[in-house]
Amino acid sequence: MNALTATGLHKRYASHHALRGLDMEIPEGSLFGLLGPNGAGKTTFIRIANRILDPDEGRIELFGAPLGPDATKRIGYLPEERGLYKGMKVGEQAMYLAQLRGLSTSDAKQRLRAWFERWELQGWWDKKVSDLSKGMAQKVQFITTVLHEPELLIFDEPFSGFDPINAQLIREEMLRLNREGRTLIFSTHRMESVEELCSHIALVNHGQNVLHGSIQELKDRHRSGQFVLRYRSEGPLNLNLPEGAELTDHRSEAQGIVAAQFRAEIDGASRLLAALAPQVNVYQFEEVVPSIHDLFVQTVQGA
Image 1: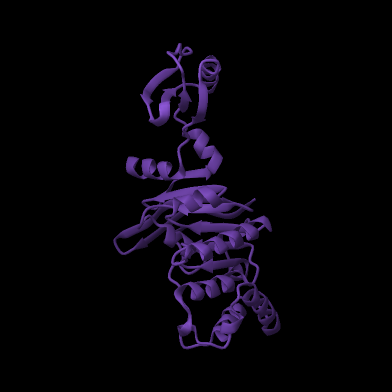
Image 2: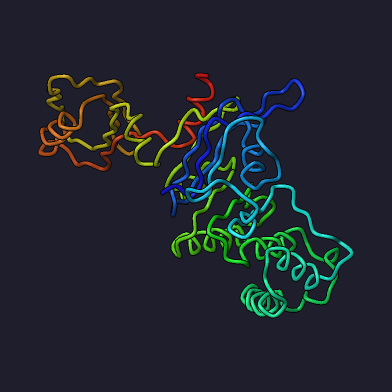
């Protein structure tokens, strides 16, 4: 089952057509990266999924059922534009947001106290939100996003404004929530986070889903057949290439190491390595697999 399914979504703002028949399938239990250049339609899609906006056309389903009023209890949403009321006390603000999600006063207070202790925020409960640093305010908002234990969590640029230590804390929490069975969607421009965290991605461009699938499927689909071999040799080599293999670069590097790049099928690359192994000391042999950053750039520029 999909956690979220969008079919034929259209959304227009005056003369701007933000979504143009967007289709999207987000598998249940996935950690899903929502990618795209600025203005591609990602935020519009996220707002429709949260019932902040209605689509002009199309439909969206949550766990196989039409998106309805109860969605707010099943979804947690951390928007890119952070928003806490600066004049309220931290604990008061957190309690207010928790109760908006349907938690009772006692449940909200119990859960918040536990989170505040884990993240060493308990000393800020009775202080004003305006006294919080940007990073601490974002930690409070993250807590209020996940507090009601929703089945689907949507994070828009969740690492924005965090130092490396707190960014790692958020990553670990996201992975823990996913291991516990939550479906996570997060929108980001940080491709290294996508490579590290995601099981699936979709790339939105000009209001359409132009690239989607699991990370492994996409990398397999876009293999170029390029391999890199780095080696050290005491003498000249017999570089008889298997049929269909092509040497594309061969150059000396530092400390007597030679780098060879060639294009071949997997079995051809294996035969070449087997032929060279008795002649050289191999330091590296690997396939050049496209990164998510490469796929992003190629797809957007190709469009």
